[in-house]
Amino acid sequence: MKLLQKARSILGGLQRRLVKRKPVPAATAPEVPAKGSFRRGHHEEPGVGSSHYKLYVPPAAAEGKQKLPLVVMLHGCTQNPDDFARGTGMNELAREEGFYVLYPEQPDNRGLQRCWSWFQRNHQQPSRGEPALIAGITRKMLDKHAIDPDRVYIAGLSAGGAMAALVSRLYPELFAALGVYAGMAPGAASGLFTAMMAMRRGGRSIVFPYTEGCVPMISFQGDLDKVVHPSNAQYLIAACVAPDAELASKRFRANNRDVTRTTYRNAEGEVLAESWLVHGCAHAWCGGRAGGSYTDPLGPDATAEMVRFFRQHVRNPVSAVAEEMAA
Image (cartoon, rainbow, N blue to C red; front, top):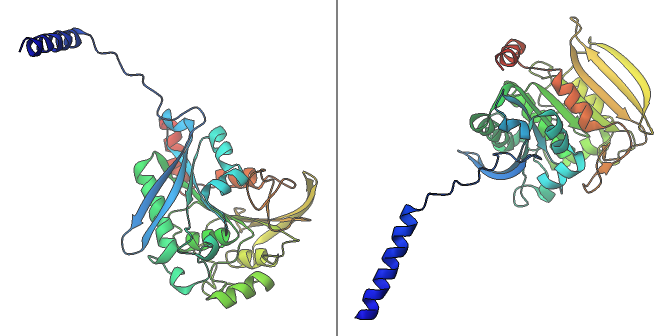
């Protein structure tokens, strides 16, 4: 009994000391580290399906001065968001220039070798399939983060490039510009067999035969690509640029590779598309970083050039100017 009373006395004294003690303020870590953060998330689109994704949040997001751009990146076959981010170096550029990067993920159980289903008819219609899922994840980012809805862009490599072109065609109200590396024209195939034929010989858009509804585009293609035939770059342009567009081509040297860049403009002089043919490059992201698959360190920095092109295109320029003035 005495022992019990003694224990209660000790506990009571300890409790009184803890109550009197002033609380130590918790260390407040910044919301976004100096190098930014790369976060994994999950999204379920009603009636469509679900997918994981990764989002790079730049340090500039913690400042909260103004809404930042978003670049949606679609990886190629056998890749995943981490691999694609390493190879392109997009997160590093996003940290320097201040924009979000979203990487939707194609899981093993949905696409063969994690390829996006750009060639299947049930994924070539609005509000259905993978395009609807990618658009849904993009809208989720707009709702959750301080992202400028007029500066949202989409890009991809190979199957991811073909899917990026398709998504931008189905949801032009979401994106201000498109970047495609070794991709196919939207609707260039309607099944696995026609997809293989398009990749080997080139494929013209058979689902979207008209140029209306396209967003400005920059494309890259290696002329030694044995996976995606180089002619696909021209079919990609033809699907979104009218035949009477003004064009100007220039050949130059960039990081030990020759490049032919063709710029397409409308009658008002506005840039509709840029097509970069990288001579001596195979099926790889030129100017890429070591550690990522399907990269080539030589040639122009495709990542920097895409972002440069994106910066030149805003869906609603008036609102973007107002945003900058308010900041």
